[in-house]
Image 1 (cartoon, rainbow, N blue to C red):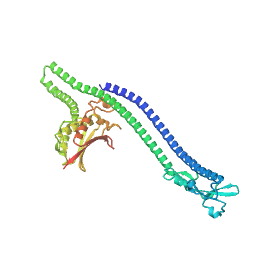
Image 2: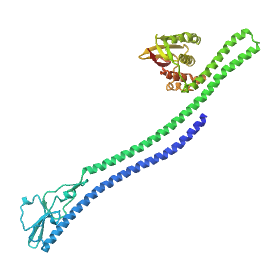
Image 3: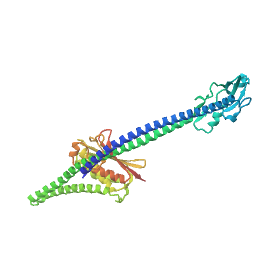
Length: 438
């Protein structure tokens, strides 16, 4: 089933990678297109401002040209002789006088052009504030009136007098930058989503492969663990049959059969516990436990087993530490940790230490040994179900890879945590932290 799931995940990953590459290419193209479009829009708007300025300059100059042409034609036709021509001939005109001598001081603040007709000289004055009147309310253009001077051409306005307001360029730049940020952020967001999706699928596929490998190892280990006691019991039964139920032989064999049956029953119980751990509706019957007393009783009970395995047990247990939890579950965890030290420590003069102390509002329980320790990088993995390490030496040792997983889940249900690490002096240490009761 897991292999089929891995195959489906792999196929899904391939499909997703193809779609992701296509989508990312589309997104990159979209971002580049939007950036080019934004640059083009900025250029168009900037050119539009320039065109608006040029159009306004041409319009105003045409007004001055038309006014000048009208005045000169009136003078040439004699209609304007001996008259003061005023702005009724156009708002661009301030006035016109004939044969009047002006001092330099009188003309220094005026824009004027002189026109000769016959023996007379006509001075035509332009309204230099006329552009400001036209540009009133214009959001983009501003007018800078020139100093007074004599003009040679009635089309006197240039780009120096009609300028584009700086805030107009600033608005264009601000819109340009805002659109660039928006497109970049949107594109980056979608690309990030694709990368996250690809990573999640890859992680799921990797985890599925790991579970497949771990379950394969678990099936191998559990088959081995089941086969050993069954084979042993069969041999004992055959022995009893051949010796016609000799009381002496039965007295030696029956306890061993009982031990194998207990081993088999414990293995089955572990499998059933894993099943119950996933039952979210299972209620917990916790009680207040004198952890110090119970741990001391456990150490006394387990001491003979540790000694028979050629190891030495040392304890340092602080008195009157109480926690809330399940005593049966805690004892199973302690037994599992002791079994692990005996099976995996690999030390010729094995020493197992059990310590319990108060730390702030918590109780810290440690099981330590002087063995080979935990390979780097496997501290967290050992708490996963079915995981038994990456070394052949560990895999060759009996076990199902469920003990530490069950311990972690039980401790979590009690509101505590369990961690595995190495001691500075060598060896493995398992630390259990529980909330201490008053």
